[in-house]
Image (cartoon, rainbow, N blue to C red):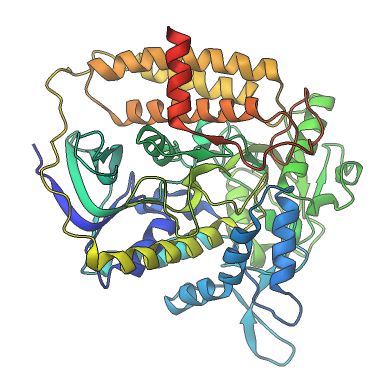
Length: 546
């Protein structure tokens, strides 16, 4: 049985949020990173568009970026968070440039090379710095190379966290705090105990709860679920962003067509070539994602269509290949030459706007626990995330968390000792996996059908009923058999799906990413945030089972 391992800072997740946090504290602390898969499998790696920041002070401004973010968030953004993030954007970009991220440049009329800024939906100016159409890959691989070389960072890939270890769970006196985590080595099947002075969740979102998603297989809501089980609040889980334009092809998996394609002139049309976005919003293709996704969903249902078209073939071929080389090559693999013909696209679950409730230092409710990136709810996104604000949020809050951790480090004491090993004394190897695979499929199809782009109270109640039944089956399976990666992920996705459904039922209005036919208009008296508390949930469960 593996022995317990300890460090100063334990980071769960290997995307941009986790890696940048690790690099910011590693010169002064021993850091352990647990990555569920290879670092090349995080959602960050698949981010195409770029990072939004005010880098051209002559044409752009902080006030403009703040206003665009607030407008996209449909009145639910926390203004202090928006200002905090936007004003720290330029320094976050400088930090990446100093570490060698190869952002795209273009030659100016005076012959000088400057960083190219593109414009995406919801932005009033060109402010998205990018590395062609593979920004996430450029940032992730640059940070990865630095992490692998840093002497104070220990990286464990193919490790999935199971649950947080807290002082309350162990019956230790004093205020409840986070002590460590149990994690499964996906290759060996062994569970190891990790203790740390500080723990940070950087596990990404939960869009694998849906049948169609742009996210990689690792996006199963693990950090949100673990934090909830440890007693932390979550907020605004009803706001799931559906990316309007994912490639529609039976062999294509999770490949999105960047927002920047529309930003550079791409037009959405019906299969007969007729444009339709002006019928839904005067901003047309540059409307925020929730409006574009809902417009596509409407046109598909109205016309009985399997997809719509995104067409940028009217632009010069050299322009398309230079700005979107990854998209061009990938579409070509599937038989589409985007310089000559349109791309068939459909909406897909793309981003989790809610998550673990944190403050401006990325601190969660539990002492010594932080949450950074998509798994966190900071108040930046409100009811809808503005394009390319996600990587910005990762970078800014990684810096904030690092600053808070390093400030506390001298007085924090040693890493906790004596944490008990994982107990497998009363479980056996699973006799079959069909329960897990069948329930996984049923959950994702149910969430897509009943908790998707357009919702109703009846659909949500139907989804809740199915989740309740699946939870009981999985709870019994989890209690009797040894944990596996698929079982851990399914357990987490069921919990997160329930949080999404409960949040959606609680919001009696339509706003941003949450659209329900029963309450089709925004409500002036609606709460800003849908905050769920574990103690209230547990009390309602006890009443229901009484």
